[in-house]
Image (spheres, rainbow, N blue to C red):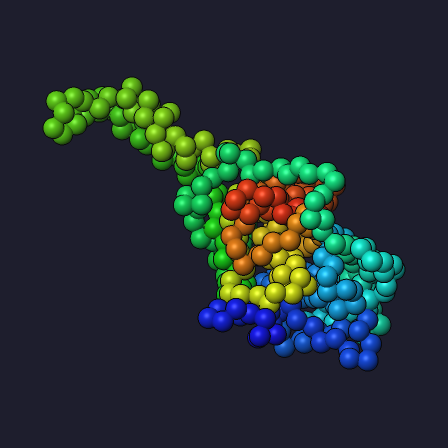
Length: 344
């Protein structure tokens, strides 16, 4: 593996979590190493993104290396024991020159805990149809984003001093986001307005002019503060903007890149409804299924712009849609995740 990583670059810490051992005599069977299972805080099961990533690598071991995965539809069926190995059994549904289909069933002992269907194909150099949903012009600039980790989200959700043991994802992923707290933001603006109302004329040094409340309102509408307010989620917003990348360097293999991205895509998705829709009685949100569409090859070690939208939270389930663009504005992947909130 090391020879496929460019000299001078450190291999990504995420590799330990996504790797599986494939049986030399039967490539349709791969096994995880329990020593590298990741158990999120409050969860009793192996991290779902890790299971998806390992399933992708297990399936890749059975297809032509020239093929790329273009979609995966996965379902979490039962909880997993982090201390026990996961056995990935791949079934070949179809193998053609340009298309291959696989089903991956994941077992612990005789229990089926996860399953996924995957489609592989050769990306066309000159597609018959070409349209790409470009990065919205309203997407916040990279320099405006602030670093964030999963435990920051957990603090916002649970408000009980919880600190997730997230060293694994902290080393493997780097994430920046723009999600100012609208309550705090509006409170600060109210303080500024009150200050200018109480002090209507503030001399501007060296100009002979005064800064009035009216000029404050004008600067608020046109200045950088106005841009921040405009881009900050309102009290009813259900959108979070992020930039995300996998740290380190990955092998050139298609499987490692898509598997690493798949694990990363689950790191900041299932808990988003709880971030945006506060509920003091919430215990945890567990994933039910996770679907990813890969629109074109890309390297997850480069920054990706991410738009997370909570479409609905009702009927005991929530649905999150995530779009991923490269820095130059190409939409490269779309993920959809359904989850189930658990209350105290």
